[in-house]
Image (cartoon, rainbow, N blue to C red; front, top):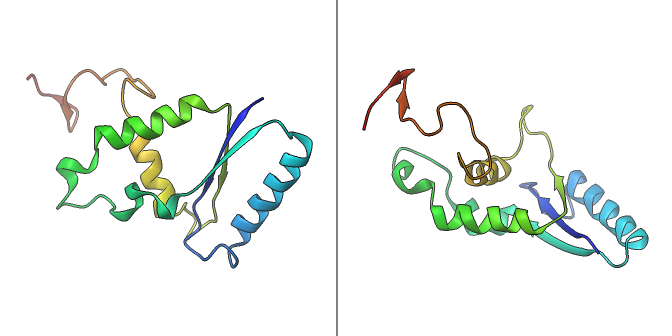
Length: 127
């Protein structure tokens, strides 16, 4: 039995979004073939992290560790992820971008050469 996480990100009502309708049809067919799999569905528009995008007023506390950990742990628990996303001006919806920003945490979900050093404009600042 696999756990499948389905993320819907369209800003349109579910009945008007082609990407959401296509994903729901896919999940319906998937369930027919994989009857023992557990399906976890989230509309990213309804999650608490979608209620505020990053701006100059909340930059300091936007990267809330509790929220990040919550979604990182959720992703660790599932075997498969399905992302339903329309294209808006050749980009993804804001709620999907915010979700990715929340889970993309250096040394938790990815690492890179300078992740342990504090850098600003390519100048290393020593703490």
